[in-house]
Amino acid sequence: MSPSSPIFYAIGNTITESLDEILLGLSFNKKMISPKYFYDEVGSNLFDEITKQPEYYLTRTEMEIFRCHTAEIVEQLGKDCLLIEYGSGNSQKIRVLLESLRPLAYAPLDISNEYLTRSVKELAKEYPWLHIHAICLDFTDEFDLPFSLNARRVGFFPGSSIGNFSRGEAAKFLKRARLLVGDDGGMLVGVDLKKDADILNKAYNDVHGVTRAFNLNVLKHLNKKFKANFDVNNFEHLAEYQPENGCVAMYLRSLVDQKVKISGKEVSFGSGEQIHTENSHKYSLEEFISMASDSGFRHHKVWTDVKGWFGIFYIS
Image 1 (cartoon, rainbow, N blue to C red):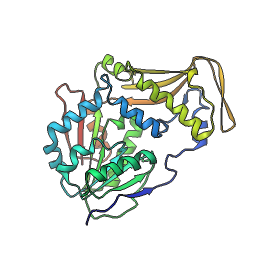
Image 2 (cartoon, one colour):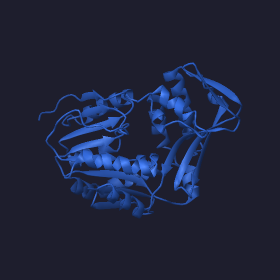
Image 3 (tube, one colour):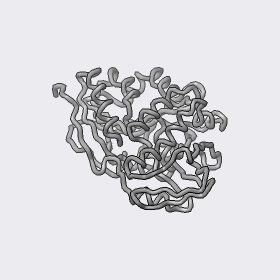
Image 4 (cartoon, rainbow, N blue to C red):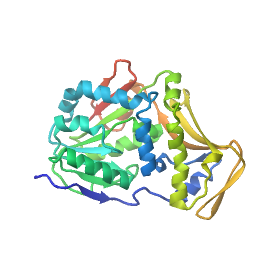
């Protein structure tokens, strides 16, 4: 194949912006909003800023592992593969692999069309030899690739994004990924490992308030997409590690009794009532290996940083 301009696809409702889904989540006794609604263009940019905060060790630690073990990782993945990145965002981490791996093609998957388009165009300028098939979709739904390519498939899911799923959802995701990559494929997955609660609490409560802004932006996103009238000044950001569940849970807490309209539908909030917006599950090495094995991946290789804070797993 000769290099060409990126090819763009959209599958389904690109952000699955279902009013029914939002209203259902806010009708529960324990209200919730899916974390996928974080990622409009503003939210995606805010998340980039989170990764630069001194308390947020995850991105720096993962990149350190990639830089130290690039050759070993590339050897495991194998060259001339189709590299499929789940939640590609700004495609920062893929750059560590591209020159060494030289995949036959790259398929970034992301829920934010605007963000995906911009980052892919930048990537294409930096790597003119790279064949890019960019797909805007909600990859938490079942899907197949909208193009055909005779190449071994390797999935790439960095950043410990798998931790945003419940443990049951993570297992289902891995089972779907196993079917997508096939018997000769594999998955490269970044996983945040269990550690001291103080380290985790600081990571999700940075002193500059970027995580706070990111969490509150989900309400601004709903205002824009669903003609809602959330007043973000009436909510506060909460994030705390729950050792009994092995996860950091993030909430927005209502500061007053209030009523909000979403596309004309009224939702009431009591003072102190919380909206659950995200979990970030942490795993031990053994827990993740066991889940991968139960999901159909029989082989594994793992690389960690010197502190044992983060793991990059290749499962096949």
